[in-house]
Image (cartoon, rainbow, N blue to C red; front, side):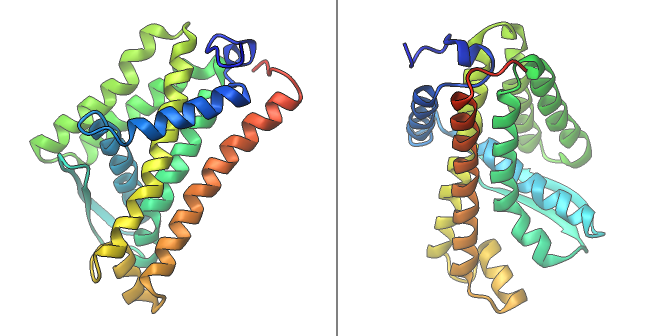
Length: 233
């Protein structure tokens, strides 16, 4: 059946169109379940703050540390760098990370490498930017989220889980900026408005469009692959 995780297309790392829609619906439901959705909010928040950190380093600044909180919020403490790039990078970067993870999840032969690299990136963040016990504990849980499934490297459930995880990151990156509309004078959008004189709602709109574009690119990848038949990668 088209919905089978073990279909020929999914065994090659690429889901069928129908399975992709199931994964998207599942990701949407999981992001709305209280408590169960929290670790995945941490995941989006982590990629958000890491994107701030990377933008800071790229623009010549210094990153002191990152902080993650139980409610899914986060903070990147830094000095220097280009404020506009740093402020924009958070939500944009989270959506981009989600797209990257989805592409890695469709690379069947590299699934173990993908999980390993993501886990090592999180562990490196602990060493470089983890300072408080709560943040370190959350990062350790995120690292385990990537590293523990390596034992299932030959199971189609692994690629299924990683694709759903990627979609959840993009969906959270889509939903998170809308909160800023109810927080006048606060958040990345307000900071960018002060720096550029472009209204905060426009920045929020750009982030929403970015996340929607990333989701659309995932669909295009799946749709194109299913037009030419299952890929062997």
